[in-house]
Length: 570
Image 1: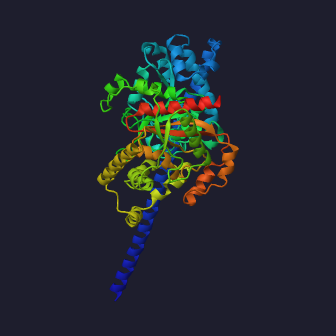
Image 2: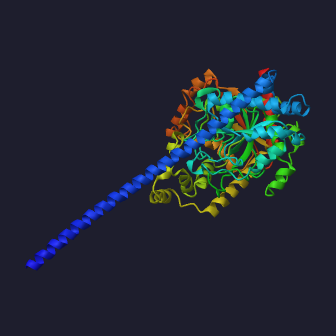
Image 3: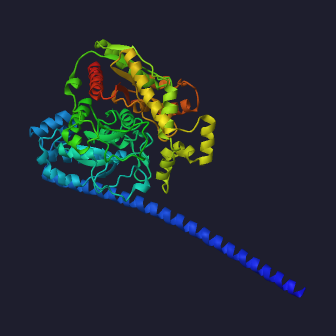
């Protein structure tokens, strides 16, 4: 009996020891997890600090260089230089009536001033100061001596391509993107990089690294996105030409919000080599690089410069189709489809009015206008577009956001993506079978062919339609994604599309907005009304669309709209 008691006491001690050891192990484990989280948080803060330090240093060095140049060149007429369109500027540069140095430093100075107000630049390319010294070696280039701003997701040697996410910091690009190389060969000087939203897939312009970019026409509004830094800088007068990229309206929306012109070419027309996406492999909705500028002629000149033998040689996957000047300069009357409302989201009063006014001008000019409605718009947006972009359940996007503070502009948009996999699968099962990527791509192809057939039945050359606007109040872009139907449809279809400013929001528009109900009168309709309220005086634009590979025709149509609007104002 005594032996049994001793044994039980021993077991009790062993159990206590095991419990103590287990508790200690749990405590140590918890401390390790906490230490790792603290270290990760500190590493994130350090990465952001280093990126901001690089940004600050580049701004300061650019400012010092401008001061030195102004002291030694006190007669430079910067105000005149800044008013010139891109074609006017290139003509004076090539004729020797302006020096590349005067043009360059005039724009650097203006960019510094605009950035202080709008926070649109992620940093100056200090290499551009050296390139300026040797730019005469490319004097025959179509963009000789032109300073060009670049969206931050274009690779530039020895610079990070963050796309607004922490995980991409401290990984400088090994070489320039193809389009950067082509710009340089054409005599252009890439001189500054511009801001974008966290992870690109948002039409605001804010991220945890560089902060919020604001609108040049109203500092209480967003510049749009994802090429929002470009839109703000060009709209604020700090750049004569910029390169953006567009996967759902990312060139066209900031162009609309900021009152400038923007063009999304047919995907594949320009090289995307070295243009960093937030994730690769998504083929349902195609991204496209494209130009942004103050007028359509500038967009056309940029396209003409980029569509050259040098680009075709650097990237053989791009079809060697030079810019068709004859199509762009044609004055042949057009048959133009038009719509005020796509049936998926009711436009704001100013969006609809912009289309009506331009339609009237086009009819007066001798063009034929034909009513048009997109095919199966609900199916195109929900089944093809949304399910195509997020066929992986948004897992790749979430991986890119790991270890990064979530920007407020993105928070509501990505919240559902964080649902556990089992819940997402359950919801997907209840709503619709899981995406089969092959079937998805086949369905997209079918929809494109059906839409082209629909155009031909309507016998139209081009399409006039609304573009999202006016500029939003902050933090609404991540909440109101339904209105993207007006832009993302043409990424799905891979139709070239561009934006032209035509008007401004009036007091009458604001009064009509008070009675805005929307098509479904649901939560998103109410949010859209809130998003665009208080927009009086902001730019209003329209969108011009053409069939695939008819980029020059699209630009020609944009030019027609631009000219008619200018004439009507006189």
